[in-house]
Every structure is written in structure tokens, then in C-alpha cells.
Amino acid sequence: MKENYKIEIKAVENEPDDIDWRLLEALNLEVNTEIFKAIKEHGHFASPASGIAVIRREFEELWEAFWKNPRSRYHVKTEAVQVAAMALTLIHDWFPVLDKDALTDLESLDSPYQQGCGESTP
Image (cartoon, rainbow, N blue to C red; front, side, top):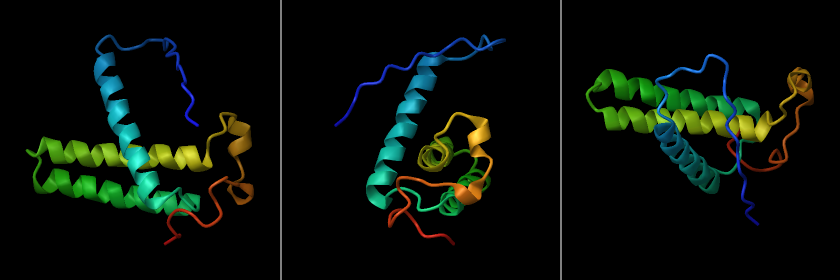
């Protein structure tokens, strides 16, 4: 069941004046769409290591897209969205706790998605 969430963006101290909030909303939508597609196709990350491996692979694709053809802004942006999506998926799957003291021990880390889903560790 889908729930509707209303997220309130709180003002940040010394917030830059040149932020285009409509663009950020559109980018968030693109990143979220990529997250949903990736989870539907590949499942959740089975471990933090598998998530980091995927992020590394996506970053390497971004690097290659930029250095091979920096004029292809669409391709570079597409790869950057994929990096962001995988980073947020890792946070969602393994580090959703907001309390920094609860995130100190990776050995005792559990995820509801840990059993039999996602990619295996490299």
C-alpha cells in the first residue's frame, strides 16, 4: 500500500540564493524513478558491500561518459542520476537510521532486505 508523504523542506542556515527549487524537485523525481526501476529489476542491496560495488560501477560509467564525450551532457546527466539513485538506495536499504550513534558498527548491521535479494557481494 502506498502512503502519501508530505516532506517539509526546512530552511538551511546560510542557504544559497541561487538554488532553483523547481529544478531540484524535477531532479528528485528523476532519481526516485531510477531507484524504483532499479529495485524492481534487481531488488534491494544484499549488503553494504554490494551497494558500494554498484555505486562504484555506476560512477565508473559516469567518469567514462564525461571523459569520452564531455559534450554529451544528456549521457553524463543520465549516469549522474544513476549514481545518485544507487547512493540513495544504499542509504535506504542499509543506513535509514538518522541517529549517528546507531550507525557506528557495520558488523551488527541488519537490513529488512538482507535475505536473498539484491546483488551478491563482489
